Length: 427
Image (tube, rainbow, N blue to C red; front, side, top):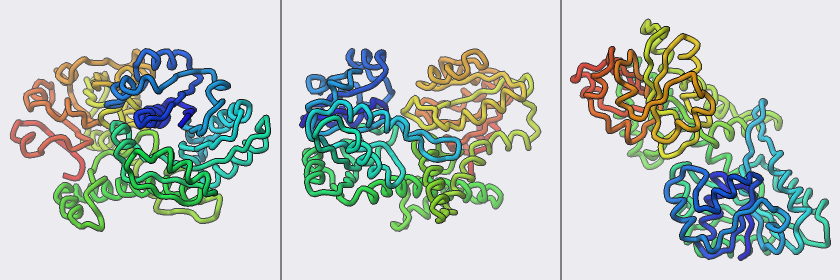
């Protein structure tokens, strides 16, 4: 099929490349000319495992352009995969969605199915269809389907090609059949429903996982007070098939492009509809407090940050991505700086993005060992393999072997036996 993809971020580019992998002719559209040139050179603008290899493999079926008029013409399906960032009140900002819709309405020259893959509030697809039908410049039929994404950064290619389900929200049999044809070669179970249900599946899924993380973090905090071990607790919980063992890793909270904004967006939507989701509201509050738990622990211990070398291992919100959105490092480093700390940071792929926010205020290290040398305290914010593989000897080069681990990377007994003052979450 002839497909266009509006937006080349995590969702847009990964989806486009995977569609091309399965034989579709896909045109990727973005407003950033430098980004387009980068992709034309076979280079992915985002750090995502396996993506560049798949781009090369499917290169003959992929086109990259900023010319939206030609991109949206003669297309069977146009996907919208642009961002929907949160506003100050927690609601989703749909400006990018409607900017693309305006371009589509100006450009299409045949009947077209527009597919909203971006995460949008329930009812948005109805509004988008009305907008397109009211503004299309020509006697063309434009209909809209919902196709929410369920990919995780760091495993996005695998999640797209080998996902657990594909959710399709369509109001007509024709649109449903078109979407089934788009994904017929993926070999993944497909669920069809109306558009509003499909929109809700996305929010309900993400918010449930956020609830699970926040719940286990609160249990971990209680474990510390009661001298229980959260890892033993979660092992016992996870063997119950009704609970499962995923998203039960205690730590310093979730981040990234989905959970923070999706929980806030659904909470906002529930409030304006007089059906406040108190559990979702609680998850948001727990996560915000959890992010600075290690900083507060250090202050309660009497640690004085002023003039001290603070080693920070991990800047991204999770491993295998360069994404910093809502990463705990962004909550903690300003606090360290405000208290006069000299910060030395290491992250295998996130430092370039972090330098855009803090170009001179902190020191960036090529290795974790360099970061730890003569440090007064160490904070671990991301469980990168390079960090988890550090030998005990690396921490023994610190001036004071004080380690606060927000991702439970190491065995407490081994750290204690090595003479390291080690504090983790819930252990």
